[in-house]
Structure formats: structure tokens, C-alpha cells
Length: 110
Image 1 (cartoon, rainbow, N blue to C red):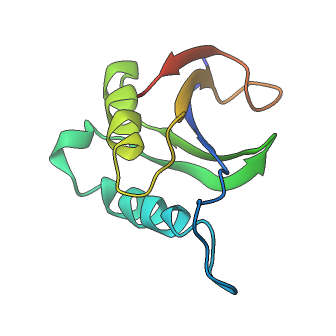
Image 2 (image 1 turned 120 degrees about the vertical axis):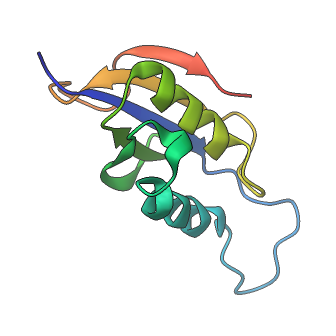
């Protein structure tokens, strides 16, 4: 059986107010930092970053695995609640054998 993976889809929504030259998606770095510290967090249930994040169909997608579906979805909910993360963030429960991003069961996070 293939490894369980949860994709966290965050809309690449531009902020309403953006200064010239300002990076519009600072939350990507915040989520990456959160994921880097995840393995040391006892609340994660063993969840860890599965693969590098990437842009896909207007979203930035982060990948986590290594825990039960319940734990992975709980981590995805925590990510959706991080300051600056746009509303509309959702998760896709899938597995490592999925042929492409976005296949699986959609879970609303906000």
C-alpha cells in the first residue's frame, strides 16, 4: 500500500496592499519554517514534510506524510491558521502513488 500523503493547497492570492518590490507571499517561508520544525513537535503525530512545495493551478502546494490521516489533516489545519496564510486553503488526502497533484479526497480547512 502506498504511503499516505496530504497536499495542502494555499491560494496564491495577492495581498490587497502591496508595496513596490514587496514579496507578495511571505507566508510561504513561514509555512516552510513550520514544516521544518514539525518533526520535533509532539502534536504532529510523526508528520513530516514529504516533498518540496510547488506552484500548481493558482495554489502553492505543500506535502506532508508520515502519520495517520487524522494527524496529517490536523497539521494542515494548523498551517491554514498561521498568520498571513490566505483563506481558501484546503487539503487533498492522497498517496505517494498519485499520478498528479490534486487527486484524492478534498478536506476544507477554514
